Length: 62
Figure 1 (cartoon, rainbow, N blue to C red):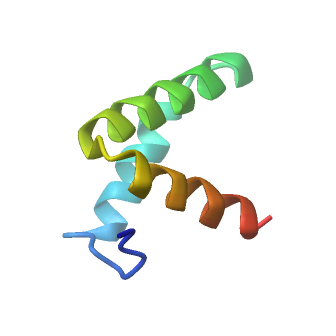
Figure 2: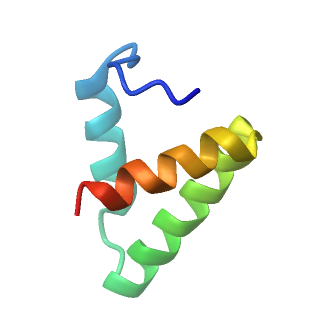
């Protein structure tokens, strides 16, 4: 089951780290980094059911 509740240890720190990771990247590099990050986190989760729920939830928000 997909957890959509705030589960961040420190959301502001992560957001700052995410912004810093994108610093000085081109748009193409930034998009590639985001794709790699998604795949790394998806691998960490590993459960297709949860990943499919996350895809649907992300798409629903558009």
